[in-house]
Amino acid sequence: MQLLGVGFLATREGPVAYATRITGERSIRLAEIAPGDHGGLSEEEGEARLQPLRVELRELQELLFAASCNSILVILQGMDAAGKDVTIGDVFALADPASCRVAAFKEPTPEEAAHHFLWRADRVTPALGELVIFDRSYYEQAILPQVLGEESQDEIDRKHGHIVAFERLLRDAGTIVMKFFLHVSNEEQRKRLEERQGDLETAWKISARDWEARAQWDAYMEAYDATMHATATRDLPWHVVPADKQWFHNLAVAEALAERLRPERERWVRERNTRGKANRAEAEQARR
Image 1 (tube, rainbow, N blue to C red):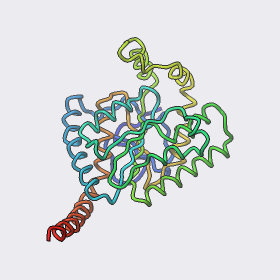
Image 2 (image 1 turned 90 degrees about the vertical axis):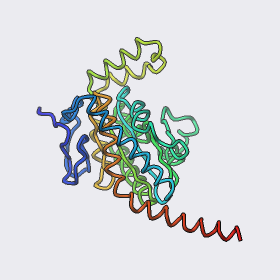
Image 3 (image 1 turned 180 degrees about the horizontal axis):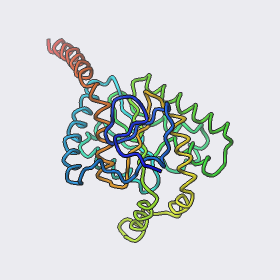
Image 4 (image 1 turned 30 degrees about the horizontal axis):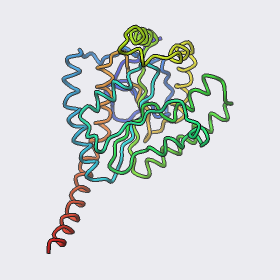
């Protein structure tokens, strides 16, 4: 099978140069996307391109906060050791912590399990002006039952429908939702897990579940294929990012975010200035 290199789009929309965008309009499987792609760049070239994107994202975040007419939700999914933590620490290295936070989703607590599967995510979605990053998400409750065969196809289809409706609700409330799948290869994941387990400084991150999930690799890929296509739309697409090279998936995520947010800049500047004029008028009135 010929693998698709970076720059291939699963849609006719404008390009995201280093990610494959899935909109649900065209079928494309993870097996067709090369996890080792690097866009023809060296690591040094990739880092040189990433740094100005970090700065731009910080500026856009500041405008987002000042305008407070939108929020941003970044969803990071992927197999264990795909690089979600690396992406958070690198792409958002310059983010303002005053309006940025990370929500990590692990095994549901008893309280969370007593509610519908979107409840725990809904509680931590971003308010207007905020940037929130989900390290895993409610998608875990759609993926794992498929892998383990715990739910019927009708139940899975209903979950997919609830997810689409939930994300449209977020969108309609002003949240810009960006969904990323960090696509690491089977071989690279094995290498990273072995390195993690062999180093006492990182062994605390390893668990039996990592190896158990790895043994069901094919089932996970099939589940992600099904779920991404069932929950992708033109306005709420998935971005599949080659993740064998960590410097490259950082660049790809940063570029996709910047491309999506740039068109909002002028509107956010107008909203910020409108807020500023109103607040200044109130302040001047109070000084009299």
